[in-house]
Image (cartoon, rainbow, N blue to C red; front, side):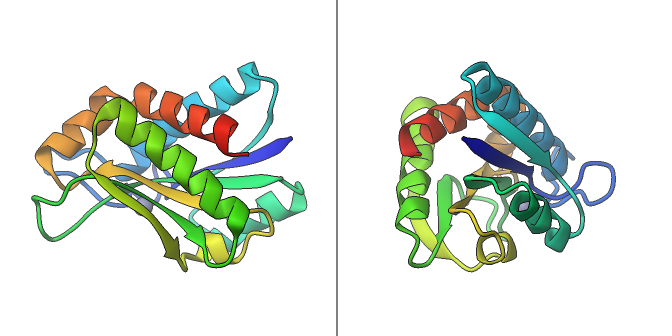
Length: 170
Ligand SMILES: [Zn+2]
């Protein structure tokens, strides 16, 4: 079983969203993704890590490696600084993607007690252009002060939740 883990955006090049304390989304996704890789490998899965400013290259990396699943890790952001919670996207019509999105989302909500925004169909580039069943997890809002704090302090726990969600969902 080969899993592609994509840290959203690209630390050092493309920061993604930036929190009110100055935390870069790309830093958080890098930290979470590196923990997920370590945990999955510890359970015997093969992991392909990719983070690139070119989304085409991200998808190509997963497709060239013939990955069985693709997971993209992000932090959410909104104009409304009160917005909170966890939501996970899958590509329309993918039953495997939908199942995986649910197990990952549920693990985060249950363990970190984030607001459950549910699973949703998404048309993100990386969901559309990867061959494997794909999900994109928006762990929590970095644009909210408490959300940003949680992401910084509990990055490792988000990674544990995502890992458990993957093991249950694939
Ligand atoms: Zn993002």
